[in-house]
Image 1 (spheres, helix red, strand yellow):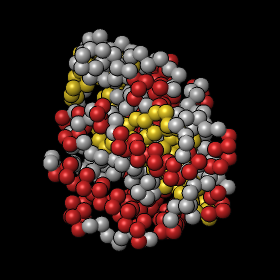
Image 2 (cartoon, rainbow, N blue to C red):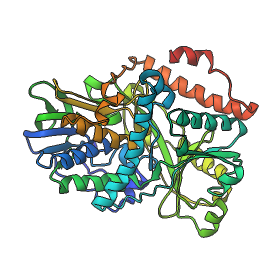
Image 3 (spheres, rainbow, N blue to C red):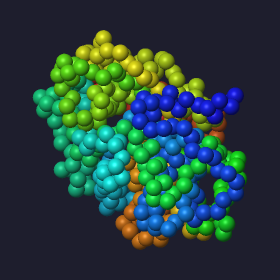
Image 4 (cartoon, rainbow, N blue to C red):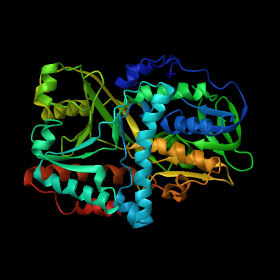
Length: 467
């Protein structure tokens, strides 16, 4: 609902929601106090995957998902459509903090998540336009090639080098033709999706398997212990087995989690359906999800209906973690994204862009996701995907399912299950630090384009702030 009581136009929040083919009329809200086995905050990917896999494990469970807006309203209905095995905390971080075996285990679990998303879509009849074409990381300058080579060495160091190929310019052109490209890497464990179709389809699957979803219901607080419960604006929800906090960036709205995660903005534009002559020039036939760095870098999606969606790297942190519609609709970022897309593909110079939208993703202080369950408090918590949430949220759902049902599995022993989140600094230090460091990183890209090499260090102020 809007401030004046009118119903929101949920289709206007992204191209994905606008074209998901589902009725976006909100489900009924909570109608008073309730008691269930498992109560879940948030009907995004994390909450829905957790509900789905719990009901697959124990079909008799009474599972309730509580959503403030509609299923798929947040990042789950507005992201880049990347279902890839990239883990938010990189392989070097995992090796340093948890060891080589743990890094390999996390990487394999992420690869399994990419496949699990496809398997569930097939099983449940969810037409999410899932297509496992791999991930292309485009080098658009010679100084980007060493980064790709280093990433391959990281994979190889944990015995997974065969999952990634380094391609030269000619080999890259066989998959896609980007202006100025000099090479690429191709990783096989990635799929493209229509994210809102996945979120909406997953919500219906949860309901078919006996779960209940209530919408237009705001969770105000939560309490763990012998009687865990959610406090909502429409009644208290008590849970016998567990409460699951799965709101990603929106968890920052809960006072107890205000410093656990921050929202960062992300913005996308999408073209009209392209004609065959343009696709012939671009040569992007396999629907690989595609990414590239630089001042006009971005993440790209070749949609099932023949469009190009372009996400611009212009993330910003809103002061006090305020998440509003206003931060989603920045015309300066949209204009930059359209220009960047035309720089990548000159054939788009006369093409119309039909949609532009934004949203927020969640970032933890150390970029390491948390997927934990405290058996004493009966509180489960999963968050912190730093823009890599489609497959990571599936992994969260499977991990939390094993933890809540006390299943002794490999997933239950992954390092995320024992990770203790670091707290973000209080304001205004948080806003100053985050946005200045983001600015410094953009400046590094500009310097590289001017000099032909990345600077060896960030500016002194950024290094001090990072510490």
